[in-house]
Image (cartoon, rainbow, N blue to C red):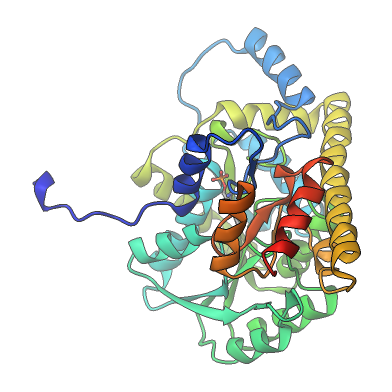
Length: 394
Ligand code: PMP
């Protein structure tokens, strides 16, 4: 049986990480993998998370199963963080999942259960896992135009033109903030125009929210998601705690289904629990407990928000530093978009050949589409990257 398997495509970012590790040059810069790093290159455990872990270690008295949808306190705390008072709790079904990836996967499966004909419209480009999970499930992905490489911004008109082809029951996958891989985001008016089309076409919005707090702040980064939920008859949200709580390996996420008709909530809730049961049964609990503790303990929450804010503003400063250095070296404003992008990523607009040149000449590692992880930079490496870009003809 095992001999009949066919090789699956490798993960480009993991392959890149491997090459980086094998590179013997003393000065090398890893801008590949999507993990936050501080100025020393470490991915720290956040202070409040560490404190919550200590408290929980003292308090935890059993490791018995929780509930199929996870601990209800986790869902409540996350719903408050993401949606505040956008909708009454009785209109919201939610289930804990293994990371944001688990939430994305379960969301697609939920769509498939309800409407096997549904097509999922995804931004071009999007996080590659969106496409590979859809493909794995045998679902149809339809790319919509998104990134305008000429400006480094969003091609909102191109996006709207494609969304005009939506059929009732189709799904539109949107990045709630901090678009991965481009860093380019819709503005408020563009969000509104997109939502109007989705509603007119009776399609379903699905928000992937993996970077709340990494863009313009916790509240601002949730604004678009809240707008989607407030205005749509139904919506799905796949939320990840990996980045904003720094708990990547704890696998902590939440799938949320909202409805304007609270009569639909019990069936949605039961179906989310059923899906968990079929895929992995009970979701991981440890990370969810830490998140709940941090969000519900005022002192821990304040400390977490302060540290998250340092992370966010640190990345913004790196963006501004890189844009300024590129302006100095190129004598033009053509890289100003880097300071306008938000989140951990920016697509620089380099060709695959230029990306390869930067790797060969300067030991700078980025994904072939020229996505960089801003957090992989620091004050010393910003000028190195800027010079390498200009030298490579970007
Ligand atoms: N969505 C997007 C757009 C992401 O970038 C990520 C993380 N790379 C995720 C979802 C999910 O991350 P995780 O499963 O680690 O929570």
